[in-house]
Amino acid sequence: MSDIPETKPGEAIAYVDGSFLVDTGEYGSGVVFFYDGEVTELSEKGSNPDAATMRNVSGEVMASMLAMRQAKKIGAKSLVIYHDYQGIADWCTGAWKTKKEGTKVYKQYYQNMSAFLDISFVKVTGHSGDKWNDRADELARAAIGI
Image 1: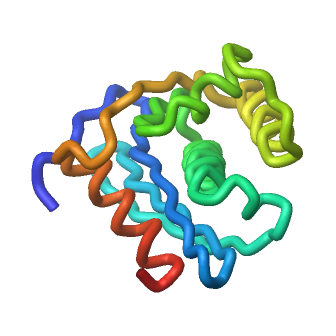
Image 2 (image 1 turned 135 degrees about the vertical axis):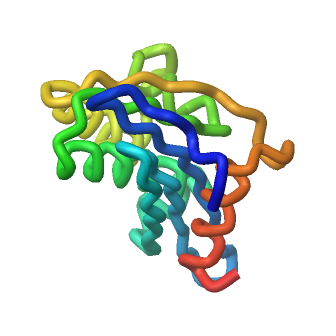
């Protein structure tokens, strides 16, 4: 893939997205992760029944957590998460209340990771032709076989 975003020394960038398969109750996460001129693609499938009540948002949350985990693993100092679902930022910042167990777990994970990383968020418009957001969506869908 070309045109990868430039990162500053110690900075990682991640585009995250999620998907949901109604028939199986499975959710998928996709991450396109940039660090030091390299791109890494991550995806996972989840099927926790409690988390699945949030449908594709479960995948969005899982993708954001995957990005944080990857940034910590490689020793990044900061992480910019590009997302198309506002809750990804707002649950972490406290702009939205965490009412469901999945959002509470997510905010706690963010708070724990904030001890190691300076994490910021950038909202992008989903399904608008943003190359990296679209790729994260493809990865999330592929994780659950769609």
